[in-house]
Image (cartoon, rainbow, N blue to C red; front, side):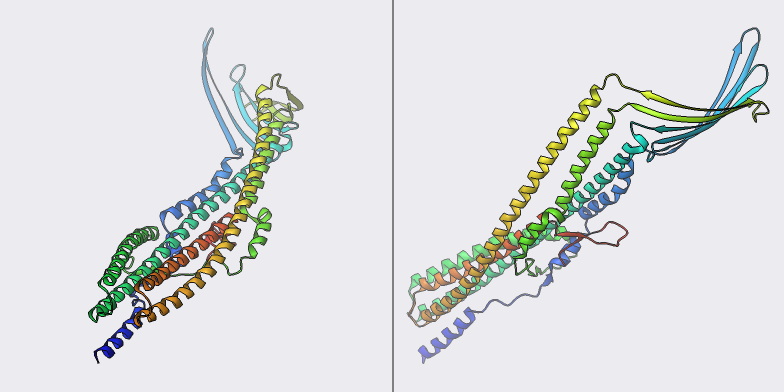
Length: 473
């Protein structure tokens, strides 16, 4: 009777031994919620402010076309035989049209003449660049450079957010890994505690040896140590997650990540992504913009080597009195000014340096593109390998479960040794930890793939303000 009762207890213990601990009630935090919360903090707002300031920086990099008003008033004293005084003044207005290389100016002035009379003059003048900055050519190039530099800065800001987003996802994946490892360790500890109970019961009936109890107690202590270490690691990661989300005091006490695989089931599309990378990615666009800007800088430096030739023409109206009351004279004129620098050491040196800069930039960008393509190829190989490792990990876990159940049954029936049972459970724990490691790693590699191919972050069309949104939904 006692033996039958023991067998019933042993059978029930074996069933409980295979069950995991009841999950505590926790608040699940999916990746999307985590990203939305983290992207509303001050770090992300700093990135957006940089984006908005680009609109103003572009206008600062082009030559101003301000309308200039000049006023001049002068009062003077003159002593020869008698003390005399006089008052003169002028007002002028000028406007530079950079897009055409044209300057238009006009003005009015008056000065005392012989006796108490006043002479006045009204003038109008147009100047046009013909060779250097001919018809605003350099100005247009400067405007193009400013536009390219703004676009380059905008791409770099998007990439900064992309790196920030990738670091957030990596943090979330580490948090998930720590959570899963802790769950598995706690389950393993509970299972070993149940095994210890079974071993103690078997020892009472002289079915087990005292050394068996010592072996299981050593297992329990080892699992307790593992749980302590993993709990500490998990708490540290959870603190970082709370800090990223900005909810140190508002976050629930019990919460956990939710697993949602980022990587697609079919990695065959990576090859196509790699083929399109050179023409569709932001990295390729950035390289093209940098090359264009270097070439345009050479054009400006070459223009500085040219002589300055300006065609000008104007009209003058002069007469006596403030309002040209008498002795009115009309005069028109046209002419050409020529300025040829005799020594162009600085301009020539600047031109040669910019040509070298262009070659260096082209080589640097070419090497960078090849380096990224090489990194992508290696990533695709690592992703494919990790996917194969995951398939093997699932197979190993399935086999471990079968072996564990068989060893447990054999141990209950006295056919298997305790060492074999302990080995089976340790193998099961190792395989579960290995699967979590491979699962997190393959998703981290996929995030890195998306970051390098510029597909982790997209910009929404049709929005008034520049808005950067994560591509992961």
